[in-house]
Length: 370
Ligand code: UD1
Ligand code: UDP
Image 1: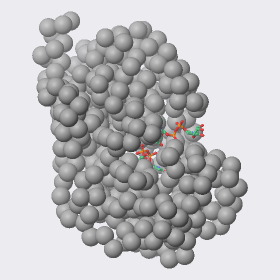
Image 2 (image 1 turned 90 degrees about the horizontal axis):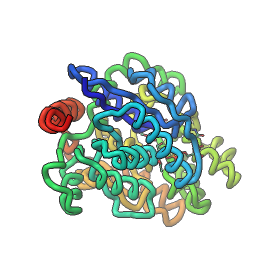
Image 3 (image 1 turned 120 degrees about the vertical axis):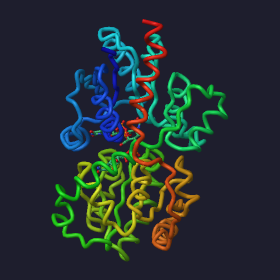
């Protein structure tokens, strides 16, 4: 039995790991140990994903919640190391670009346990983003780098990552969209519950540190969204970080009057909100792509995106944050987008490719080493 440790902690990682974990369970001879750092911990940010996405119950829950970057990452590093020493897995799988990803990769690399990075090679080329540092460090700790797109694979080549380590497999989030998209139709009642008319509302999500941590920018974004809501009702499942930041600048009550503000929703409800929106405005990496999967135009509230294919194909546009009028204008302008059809994220088989590659890699590498 080959023991693999999966390390997750934040919402987008539950979605990504769900698909890979399913595929790994289908491979005879692999035992998956599931480690949850606790980075996201509310029922609606964590538990709901485990039940809806058929994820295994974590074997180890580390309970590390919030904190400054150094404190959070450092505490995770220490706790993950302890678990890895006890479990002795033959490889560690990490996802995306959060502090959980970095702590998992670093803990494993220092114990000489091979790191497998799912969603490798993404770059915004903005080092002020905490995620950018996490991605670069994780990629350079990794033995197998699973790139979701051509661009991501090319970014890795540019940084000198050996070709043999780079595997272009497609995006596991597309796998999830295909697999759970249909389940969502059968299970979610969110549109009725919120009394939303399909294709007559905008879905918005905001949580990026660069947008929430600076009061002036946060205010500009939300004033812009409130202006846009005069043209199209806006539904906002609010991230706890954003709720706290709006409270801090005294804007939360006003925003709640102008927008349909709801608690974070589970994945199946989110899929339905995305599919039936006429427009999505977001600073989320995952949500930008899901907009494309469901053929919904998207306005990205950032000055750059890692998912450049979305811009090239005409499904997404960046929003200038100059002032609230510009934010409103740029968001609504995305309604006019008419994107080209293409499949830059693979064909929904990324997780299977990853599982197969792990098996192949294990055959070549592990049997000689162990
Ligand atoms: C993290 C990731 C970000 C990712 C996002 C997904 C890092 C550096 N950032 O950002 O890349 O896009 O997750 O959503 O890893 N909180 C709660 N309840 C929860 C979770 C968080 O109240 O269940 C609060 C925390 O206490 C903290 C704030 O939200 O005050 C931010 O949480 P944190 O996990 O540090 O970062 P995110 O903004 O969620
Ligand atoms: N998501 C969700 N409920 C929400 C908001 C997001 O299920 O209320 C899902 C979303 O569909 C996507 C993932 O969470 O699959 C993205 O997470 P998030 O936006 O928090 O992080 P990012 O992708 O920006 O790292």
